[in-house]
Image (cartoon, rainbow, N blue to C red; front, side, top):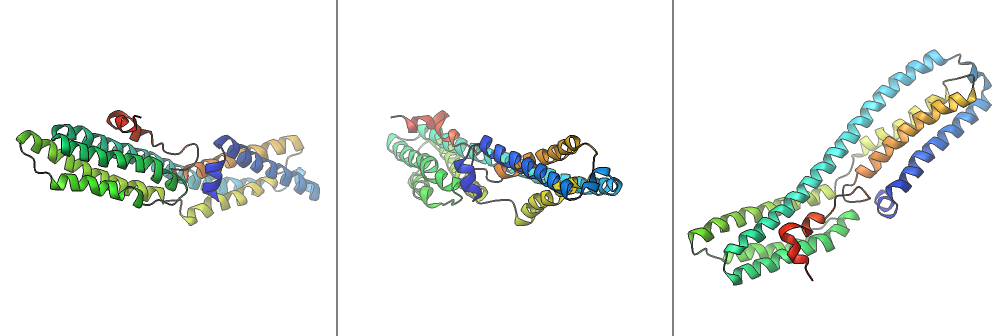
Length: 263
């Protein structure tokens, strides 16, 4: 459900629904509770409610900060892995220029098939939460076979051959890391703490009584908006390959790999 929302609605739309919906429900709940218990406006229990709000707010703030920083770090790490995989692939393409034309042509064909499979086949699967090795396995195996069957003839070719083999091993390792990251999500316990905490903290604000309804609603709406925006960040950062803030496949189309996309 989360992946469907991220892939079918813009971040702005999700922000309006998440933040706006949280604020609307909070304001409506506060008004209904105030009408049901008019004595709340006197603030008789504000001391106790204030202490409870402060304690719960501090704990919930720490939890949310931990979750958001963790997800942001995960997104940044995923971008680094994608850039590293594309860079390693580009370096193999550059190293191949030192090999004989036939070997270079076979390696270029394998690399071209690999980057096209990553962008056109694997990326949509990762966006949908179904990462698979199958789309690129054949092309990666073909690149390994080209290097495994080639015997360098000169010292110059030997140097570039060793570099190409090293970079190809890096590509295989980074592909595994990328697919693993595409399958990761926030653990259920942290999801329960992030979203369940909002269900506890926001209703507590209803109990903090103020004589003027406008001021109380402003207080409740401000807390709800902050929590709603924090939950929005959790939603959009949880899946690094889905939504508007997702990791882009652009590195596989740039630099030395751009020639594989020429018409």
